[in-house]
Length: 87
Image (cartoon, rainbow, N blue to C red; front, top):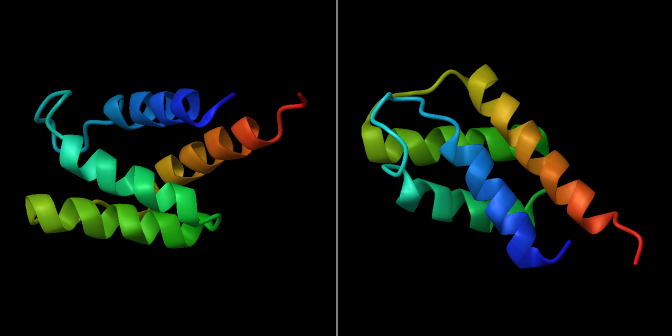
């Protein structure tokens, strides 16, 4: 899987999540920030805290960390699966 395919899967995963019930397509800025962070971290807790802070900055509400960890884990599994493919 190439980087573009991986990014599309990551975007799909985050688009499926609507933590503030504002509708799909209203989190583009947050998703872009989170995609950049996924490229640089491999730690679920670190990514979860970043996700939490990103959404809090934009929406002035805190998402419970356990929800952020759930999605951080999903994102890192997608990243891991894309880099483990045998060519």
